[in-house]
Image 1 (spheres, rainbow, N blue to C red):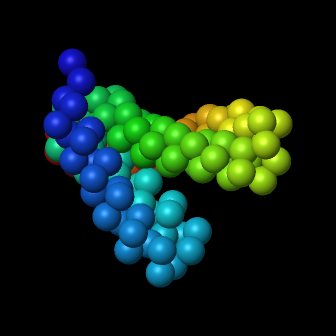
Image 2 (tube, helix red, strand yellow):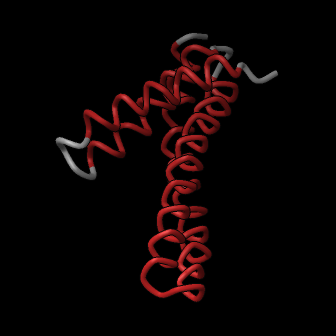
Amino acid sequence: MTDWDAVLKGFLAGIVAGVVGLLIPFIGQIGAGLVAGFVAGYLAGGGVVRGAWHGLLAGALGGLIVGAIAAFLATLFGIALAGPVGALAGAGTVLVAFVLVVLFALDSALAGAVGGLLND
């Protein structure tokens, strides 16, 4: 069963790490995904598979939220700059957001597996 408390705490830890990671571009954002996954996996415990699952969920949640905000802003600016046709910018951003969700989730799953292993 999924421990949503662990996923939420991992996600929040990832947000904090991401804000701090703004000082170190790229590496900071990858680190945020690792922190999110590790925290979720460690709090969920139960071994590698359970930790990886919770880490994956924490990272995917972060990716979904970042992607949704990006799609909303792209649609808003697209309409403002190009009228109704500009709304298509949001559709392209949704595709990019899907890739972000996968990327955010993969490193988080690996870190979650380590966290789950350490709390086994």
